[in-house]
Amino acid sequence: MLGDRSSPRPSPAMMRRLGRAIAPLFPPRAPSSTRRAASSTTAVAAEASSTMQSAAYALHSPNQYAAHRLTRDPLAGSLARLARRCKLEDVSAILDGQPLRRRRLADLGSADGSSSMETLQFAVRCLRDESASLGATHPPLHVTFEEHPASDEARLRATINLHDDWLARNDVTWDVKMQSFYEPLFAPQSMDFMMSYLCLHWLDGADVSEGGDIAEWKRLGAEEKPQPNLEWTFINERTAPKRVWEAWRTELAHRHLAKFLSLRAREMRPGAELLLVMVGHPHEFVVPSDGGPSPLSRAMKACIQRGEVREEIFHRTVVPYFQRTADDIPAALAMARTLDIAPLISSEGEERPGAFLELVDCQTLPAITKGEDDNLLEGAFELFWSIHLHSIKRARPSNEELQCLKRETRRAFAEIYDDEVGIPSTFVACTLRRRTRERAAHIA
Image (cartoon, rainbow, N blue to C red):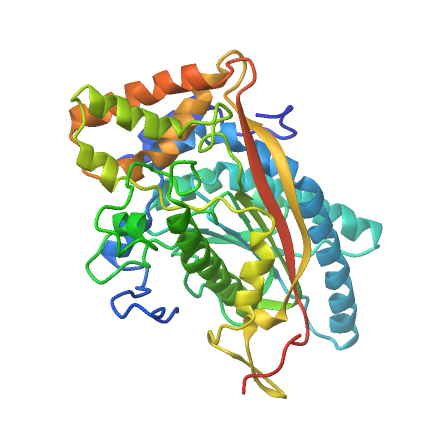
């Protein structure tokens, strides 16, 4: 973590008690005719896209909260602008004798809810302070906590319920939506502000061939080669083939983010903003400073050399995310402006939702990922393992193989990283706004 927390959050012990308490639209892409963008609500898609072990991640997610704190300035800016829009709308409503509208916010990718609630509390303070400075009434809010359907809904709801008093004091109602954010989520032009933290580097796990598996992505862009290099686990690591990396960037990362942006643009009210914070490149979880492969790929090689893990486990293991740079955001936005996803109807005809989006700000933010106090590397390792465990399990290792990989990955952490510093990391934060009119031409 970076710096002190400005508001209380559940301790690891509290989260363990909580865990015990609750224990009981995208067309096929050319030229392949076998690939599809299946609905993420199916059982196969849910399994493919369930990328975190939520119980373990809930315990170690505080070690990643630095990214939330680093982006408080753009978050405060978005909420200040929302306060000004609310005042103008409310004045008009009062003059017309209409009731004031409850504003709709959403956190996309809420995980267990602990980081979501801390960030929401900061956002509401910003909205209240700006409203007060304008001489306006703090608007009532409704917040949707979205999370993937394969995640733990009970844990998410239980975490939010811990904040019942705060929610009531601030006139915040809420609901939970267990659905992939690569699908339509809300009614057209209904949302006033949306945010997503540390989720959008994960790709749409439903975008696989019929009856296929994410492991086939390791051959994307190199299908004609009889034996492509499969000895890598992250597409951004140095050992991943350049040709495959480029295919991931254009055919997966750009397409999936463009789809997400088009869907959200359709759901945003004119003037509404969208704040996205992604794990970026370079991140030393994937590209260590010593120039070698990731700690997971090193662990795979070491265990295979000792005969403790089958080589096929390495070949099947792939973490389905792409760590972007700031340059990738405009490229995906340009693609979003061309997608004919559920066009909006205006007085001038049908218009592409993505063409209404404009990029307000995009930043690359360096940070350090680490544990707390005197446990810097162990906390970082546990975070790493909880995030990537499901991707490893999808390769179907035995329990013995999985334990070998965990031991060897922990050892690799001790060899690679400085236990007095932590893990140098990068985040990409961008703010997008929905314009009232489309920039490009109408749909022909």
